[in-house]
Length: 157
Image (cartoon, rainbow, N blue to C red):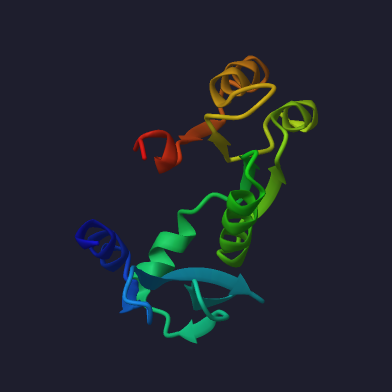
């Protein structure tokens, strides 16, 4: 919990928790500030994991950060829940996002010199993240790629 709290607060967010009524376990929720742009006007939005987005005040630091952000992202993850969570958050932040749950389809629809960033899950069926990375590099050597690794593959239960 300490690590989660530190990460969330380092990004300007808040984390809350409460014990379950049964006395076993707890429920945690967090919110993180994101920036969206509508009609050339900067606004900040807090995405809360348990409630709808709520507006918060903008500040100069977030505006400067937003100006350096990339605009087009290709997201590939075979887990639908991960894909939709990333896609919604990134679109709220003002990015254009093409997302795929199938790495082979993502590869066949890839557009060279179009994307600013690729977010690719490592562990996928058909073509894994490393294989997809290698194939895309043959098509577009300039695109930036982040490989995603979910914690469940690192920590053994």
